[in-house]
Amino acid sequence: MAFQNYTVAPLSKVQRLYDACDMVLSSAGMRMPATLGGIRWLQHLLDGMEAADVGIDDGEKPSLLDGDEPSLKSVGLLPAHGFTRITYVHIHQCRDFSIGVFCFPAGATLPLHDHPEMVVLSKLLYGSVRVRSYDWVKAPPSSSSPRKCGLARLVAADEVRRAPCETSVMFPRSGGNMHAFTAVTPCAILDVITPPYSEEHGRPSTYFNDVPIPSLPGFAFLEEVEMPQDLSVVGAPYLGPRIMVDMDDDDDDDDDFYDDHDDFYDEYGQ
Ligand SMILES: [Fe+2]
Image (cartoon, rainbow, N blue to C red; front, side, top):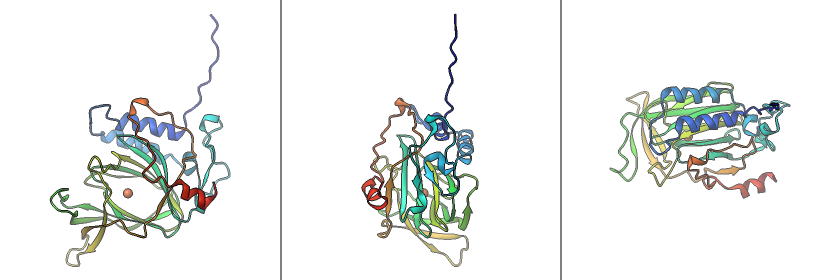
């Protein structure tokens, strides 16, 4: 019997990240907390990723692809340095996790916001960003008051992170679950969020003002505010390597969270 030679195309880094997320974070009908070992694996995979791996041109390298196989190639590259507003590149969302990239022009700020009951892994792909973050001293009950507020411990006090740096991890009660970003230079942050934001499941995004407490250095009082009027986040299409998705994933990938592609096309003519 003759055997034919088959070559198996290597997986793109974003496919490997998706597959690992699917393995570690998908509940498959029974919600189990992700293990710390699983989170560390995702952190390791994110550590090895660059902007080109998710179809973004950071303007740094002439060759932007992570392989020569057609399946690994992006269909194009987003010109991230041309962005004039915060731009969200949605890669994947299902019931258990989301993957996406926030691209910032220099000086743009994503105001202080929370990630209720979520684990967030953030990989700074390029550039520099100033981070301010807090954890609740005692998490405010979600239903006792019309607005969330409480005492919070400062975790990162306007700390500047510069790429390349390690992937950061925030847990529901530690690691800086409430954070604000200000781009020092144009920068991009690849986020894996588990579970994803969902108003329906009681995980809305809430914005806060932080009021320092002079008599208690390292702490602040956080009070919920409306989404700042001047916050503008537009959507851009994902142009990176195609991801093969697990069809049991209960994919609700409906692209409507920051799906303002028309704005993107108007602005960048793509
Ligand atoms: Fe965030």
